Length: 364
Image (tube, rainbow, N blue to C red; front, side):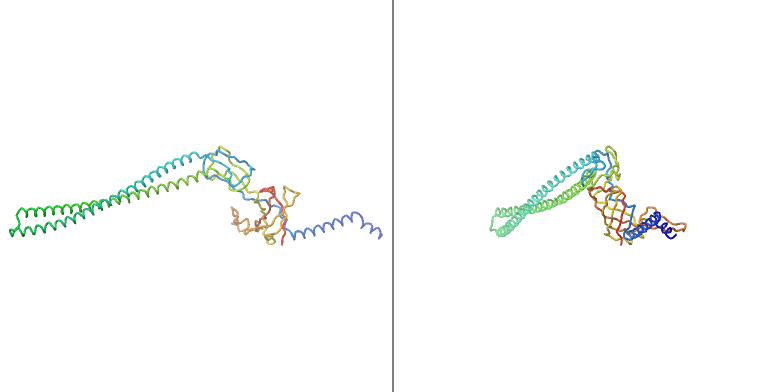
């Protein structure tokens, strides 16, 4: 009976069952041990900075030389928009600027000529005044001599010591000297008036200077308008803001675009990362720099390496566009998630934004 019982216990079915239980126990032990050392994430994605290229100016698309998937270098032309109206405005502005420049040059020449003329006129007026003053001084001396001579002649005539004809000659000399002094005095007054009138013309220089400043200000204003219009003209040619690849285009050549309208989207394939939303209960296990084993769904036979770069400072629900209020007073607690970024290298640009990946993160 004992032998028969031992035979039943050692039957193949029992052995297989026992072995299965042992394997299951070992697998569960390994599973719990692995979960204590690693954090698994199955809903992570490859992410990159997607740039939306828009038009700042309205107009017809006259050239669209790019296509989806094309690799672009920074400042390479993406789109050209019709610039005919702006070209005409720029030509008109340049013509106005040239006219103002000619007017400015004319006023400069007029101002320089007026300054020379006034300076010369003032010098001549001063010279005439000095000559008139010299003549007046000379006339005063001659008048003094003539009066003294006439006084002596008058005294001698009264003493009957001079002929009357000589006295009359002395009196005539005195009268001529007085007339000469009066003419010299008038000449001095005239020269003074001419000098004052010439000096008044200095105000013409101020007027011309003011006109020149106004034209210069107008010229500067037109220069600013020209630079602004040149900047506007440059905006009709849309260039690539980065070294990247075209992901999707939204317009075709010949279409009319509006300011702010999205034309295409692109990204830099060399700058990518992995974004994962980790449960708040697991955040304490992570630290920047932790090693991450990455399995990409598109390449199931390969294993990629990554590192934890940043851990979010706020739950993803804090950035929701539509908050979830609780007006009824009933509360259901939900585990929140925080965004964690992992740095990864994109060899041969095989990793594309939006690809699903599974992560195995080393934890504390």
